[in-house]
Amino acid sequence: MPRRSAGSGARGYARTARVNELCREILADELERIDDERVELVTVTHVAVDPDLRHATVAFSRLDRDVAEAGEALAALRPRLQAAIARQARLKRTPELRFVVDDVLARAVRIEDLIREAPPPADA
Figure 1 (cartoon, helix red, strand yellow):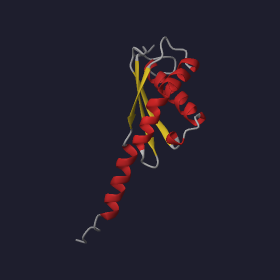
Figure 2 (spheres, one colour; figure 1 turned 90 degrees about the horizontal axis):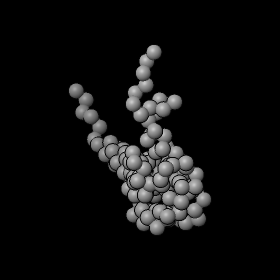
Figure 3 (cartoon, one colour; figure 1 turned 30 degrees about the vertical axis):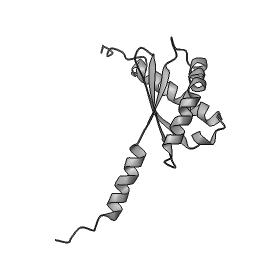
Figure 4 (cartoon, helix red, strand yellow; figure 1 turned 120 degrees about the vertical axis):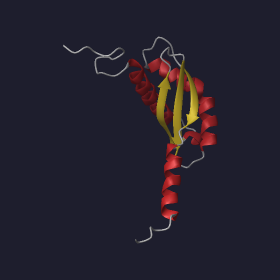
């Protein structure tokens, strides 16, 4: 009978990965409920919770590229977002949230622009 790897649960996921996804879902749902235009079009792309559950890094993006304003709004809304996690997740402690910009979308757009601007290949 094969042994499970250390840290894997019933589904084969590490506990931290399940907590990451749970927090991402809770934050995304809570952001939909907030009536603040600074967080409209904000997408929580990833959450990385420390194994000791003390801190969580929340990566976000915003479609209209005005991420500085969104970052300030998220920092101001941090207590409400942490409270939502505390209410909905059954965790030993609620992680302190830290928000960072996920620039993958912006880099992808930049790469697309470079490809469009590139001269066509010379025929050999």
